[in-house]
Image 1 (cartoon, protein in one colour):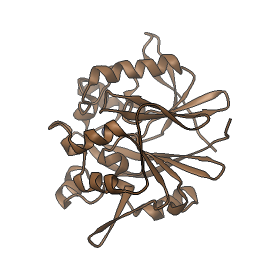
Image 2 (spheres, helix red, strand yellow; image 1 turned 90 degrees about the vertical axis):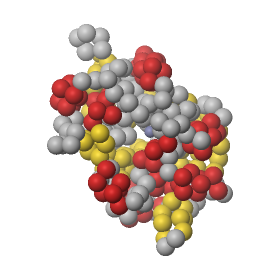
Image 3 (tube, helix red, strand yellow; image 1 turned 60 degrees about the horizontal axis):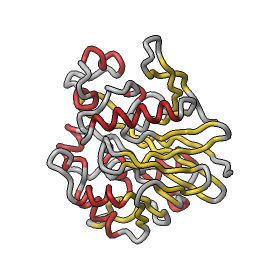
Length: 278
Ligand SMILES: [Zn+2]
């Protein structure tokens, strides 16, 4: 089995509506977990998981899109994103051209917006040597989204992905290396990839937007953005029961990304212990 190194790459933060992030959960409950600002906004992190193995340097997702019109970027999403290549070097000690693979969980702007960098009028690949792994069904959905989730897909970004020479399409679950497995779930959006990494006896599960923060661990804590929320709840429970001893990675967690999951006194899945890598 391959040996893996694990690094949390925190790119940036942005603001989303707290109510939309917690779906049917009443504000007094979620506001205790992530306190909102005066407009009900909550500030979330945008993180990538970096996995190293031999000469492979693998990123799961690659940063938020930052080329929105000013109002959307500054007032609605309040995106804070320093320059990607410099941030990557500062966080990892590696260069963007060393990245060999990017696994795109799904093509929402806050997950793969960093795929390209704007230079003048052109969009150029931020990670020029990386194969970009996407599910075929997610790419098809991104090209013709529903009215509900159209705002999560940025047309110039999707066009750049479709035209990319290093695009690799997958159809269902696959494996990048032994012990680096990719599953597919459908509750948040069609064909979202969940990455699992085997670390000795233990699995690390990157939950993508199935469980966006550690505050979203209980099965009914489901984002209003999801296209099939009942499925999201079922998918979460399936992971918790299949991999109860795994370390879970929460991509948007504002405080800390790695946690174990335990059952609380009522048998509800809840945050366990913080886990750190090196
Ligand atoms: Zn998403």
